[in-house]
Length: 560
Image 1 (cartoon, rainbow, N blue to C red):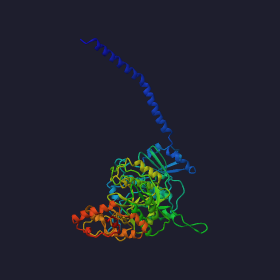
Image 2: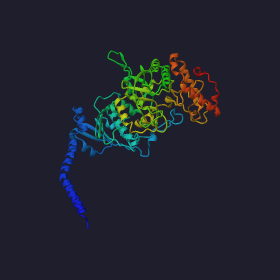
Image 3: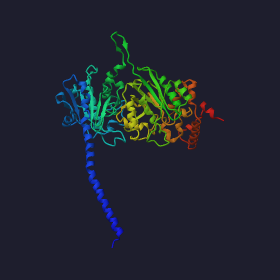
Image 4: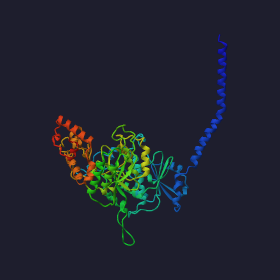
């Protein structure tokens, strides 16, 4: 028989259940009312949100008909979402054949092509375009861009159909406003991207973005820059044409123009060679020698060209004096950590290089790592568009030498992605390759990487007609000059080249003594050289460089 206390507990529990049910029933109308207000506010926002058409309509006040081209959009959907007087607009569907679905990104960005046309002239796969001549009078192009495959936040998008849609839009815009005499029609031209995915930043610059609201982006493109993009090959499957040869009109503003008084007026773009030093002074000597090599290479069509060096606080006063004496203009920066680099990795601060996009006082820059020498004048490559570079491996480019168009909004765009996009190597090269998946191939000899992978190549002689040498492996100034000390390490033999080493020291010998003093070998480098040479001797490495007598005068500092 249950106790009185047990009955009392059951009765109390029952009363509590009744109370909670009562509270829920009373509160239900309130919850319903609150949620209805919330959704009403959302609906009201959607109804009052300015449409993309209303945003740009006023620029066409003098036109009775506004012609809108539709790319990859259902016509019915277009009419449904267009907040416009139907009598004022003429909507034109733009059909085009979809690119072959069997084609992959690697087909457009092969690791190797016959750059010198010795066997076969490289060709790119076909990306079908609409019949452009039928759409010369468009005022607006509206497109829906496919998102492509993969996780957008973790890596760059390499989707061929997405590329096709972006190129279709770019070509339509240029065709509509570029006249036969290669002058720009000053009429307004807008591009609107709708949907959950925006355009490719490699083609449509954030600087030209007028508005981004929820699911649409409105652009007023810089037609000169966009024109040059349309003249580039569709991928690195072909080398970019010299000076964008088929589109020299793109760079007419850089060439002499006749004024009304028959005087020559030259509009000179502001250009710069740029390098970055951060975290230590190990590369100060490299930067000084790089500047010397640029001066020795002579001048070309664009001048003056500044030499700009971005440096963090690790570069001290004496090194700064040497760098200035070498010709660098110093700009101080705060370094940026690579989020995905290991704690003590060599590249943990390499994202500092992203600050080159903040040099907005320059129209174009050529970034060069400090372990380069310039052997032939490369000023002409300023004419190429962003991002132009030489190939590395697979579908990626080597970021050691790149043509960049500085932009603060592009810098901010990249900074917003640094914690989301995971580069293949944890460093800046991997990251920039995920941002600029569509890039323009420059000759491999413009970034001649000191790397010899052919087993039969024992001498490792550099080619005679290269523009630059990219000194991979241990750097010449970190070794004694008698031979390339990469020979002392068997796993570094691919980076060893006595001919490349000799070229570096030839440039060094042209520098004044006060600049050479910044290339004194450090105690750390000396100890590493002695240790590695001892190992090479003990293992009797067959190249025999460990037998060479070291006569470099810099050795005297460490003789007791």
